[in-house]
Image 1 (cartoon, protein in one colour):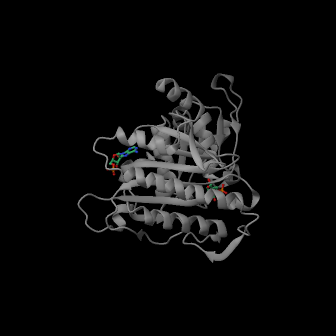
Image 2: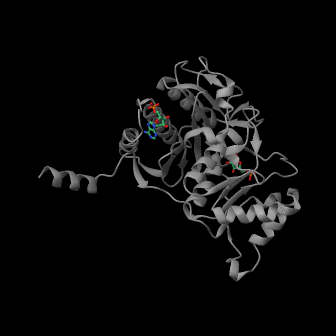
Length: 338
Ligand code: AMP
Ligand code: P6P
């Protein structure tokens, strides 16, 4: 009798993010619960940001603060709010020894005892905030360097291959939370009436090949000849290669990456004459996305090397980023490098 109740309950109520993370903790040898607690705090911060994003127009939260951030960009009110929420909640978790944010010039030390590093873009896609286009939060979790008593900048300047977990929230028609760990990549959809994330896409796999390319073609004249050649190939007629591909470009990394992860294809923000090192930031945009795509069977390159192998030199370092299906990323490298 108990068994039948349990089965019927599971079929009616999905698995929450909290339950999923607990199940994964039990599968992690020797886990103390610190990592699980940190993930739950990140989920809390994202649910708080989500609520404010969805009411931004009503709460006077659109527009700019009048300040300029370390990137030289005008800070939007929601950027500042999202950053404050993440800094505050991560600080209270007790497990984050050091954090870095796109909105903070320097790293911030929280709990000296915290054994984890969290790197994040609190609100990616800022240019789309005031036009009600999907935006998101991106994060990566690493372990602090072994043996170091006090957190330092070096804890943040680790290669992406050291990432323990990464994820993003996308504040779109639904609020989805995508989480990648050593075990799997899973997506959870927020039920706004309950305030819980429920498992909606278990074990996400990026298709080996897609039929869509995503790049800002307004930069065409600034690209190298190789990238221009790749772009032209994507638009050429070739039935054998299933060309031309469809073109989609939102202008929010989270939105363009999420579509590419689910449907396959390729997203590219190459270096160009205006941004010779690329526009996207290595530590809290490219690396988390690269970790997620590789865990889902996709690929992520700078065009010349695996993103997760890049050695960070500075906190807000930029990089070219090409993300997507294995075969589509390989085609980009073959043509654009040529
Ligand atoms: P902890 O002792 O809680 O800090 O966990 C130690 C390590 O086990 C973490 O750094 C992860 O690599 C792994 N781990 C612990 N909990 C989880 C979880 N909920 N999901 C995935 N991996 C986990
Ligand atoms: P562009 C948003 O401002 C962002 O940082 C990423 O989310 C997005 O992929 C990129 O910039 C868009 O840049 O130059 O195409 O507007």
